[in-house]
Length: 170
Image 1 (spheres, helix red, strand yellow):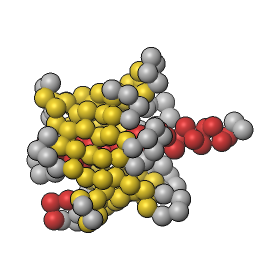
Image 2 (tube, one colour; image 1 turned 180 degrees about the vertical axis):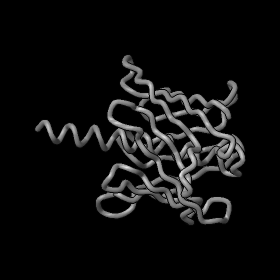
Image 3 (cartoon, one colour; image 1 turned 135 degrees about the vertical axis):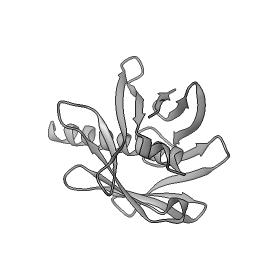
């Protein structure tokens, strides 16, 4: 098991740290946008962008090739289809419940890989995250990319819920 900290410097930039070492960043093009760039310290850079008119499917691209895609299902789960590392894999980001604001990343077999705990920063109106991994997650070759994508999915989920709440109060 390992623990990661994800610090937001503003509403658009998130930095992943493990033992005070930067592993990568997630930077959104604009506030309240799903378009972003994921950059690892080894120089890997991936674009994250919505696809289609409604933008309900989000793709992660390495240059022009789609290496991962995800979309939110009617039950609130975000299903990830990955081609990272040359193999097809599926993952799900789930909210643990209404009273718990924790999220989990699980694999196709139902094994929990990550627990993501958002902490609201009231002074900046954005979130930091504490992420706890399992031993299974730590063996994944593409774990740093998957970690940043899981943070993006968590932001996506929280943005969708905020937008739904705002529409419901109108």
